[in-house]
Image (tube, rainbow, N blue to C red; front, side):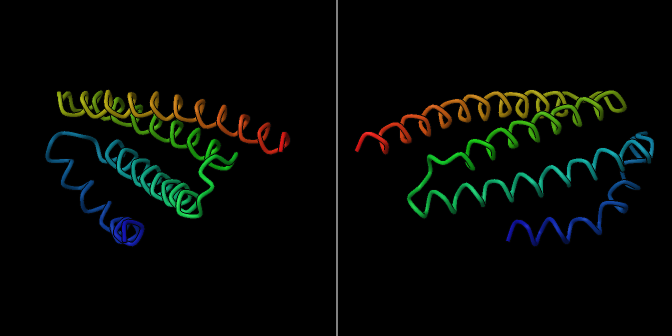
Length: 130
């Protein structure tokens, strides 16, 4: 459902970008902000779905989830930079808070990726012992 909503939202980005011009944000800047955010949102939704499938299968501690968590951290970092880019054109405390929250999400995802990597290593060692 989230991916469907994001696919539909893709076609409304130019209209929303035109509305952003009323806030004195240049059109190219709003297009970059919205399209980059859209790409990151689609990829993040897909990565979360992949992780949830492995959790439902009962195999959460696999290398695929470690890679997915690292990519989640990357896309959260890109979104944080995207908000900082928008903050340059339209100073707003809301954009600053969004950037800070996304940066914190990036750090959390990196920590989880490290924990999952260690868990995968322990699991593989345990499987070899038995």
